[in-house]
Amino acid sequence: MTTAVATPITAMDRCDQCGAQAYVRVTLETGGELFFCAHHARKHAEVLRPMASEWLDETERLASESSTR
Image (tube, rainbow, N blue to C red; front, side, top):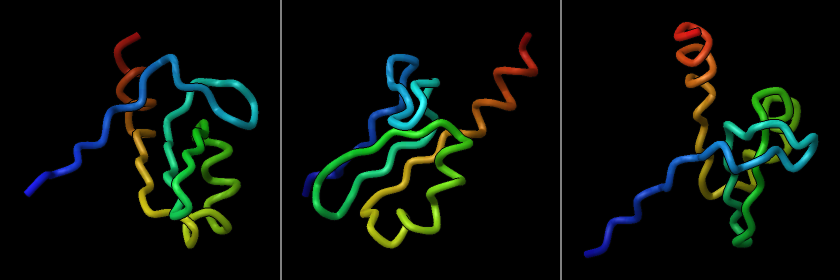
């Protein structure tokens, strides 16, 4: 049996809406992927969640990154 491991979102992944660093990756049931910053992920969540096969949310990194500055 093979277990799929979600690759983490990196600083190179950018929001498809505004180009900011992405913290959410949405894998659609149709096979596509979308990347969003925290703001745009919240804005589009109601529409996208029913279409998503996976919703990887790493927005908790925002709090940990700001506390290390």
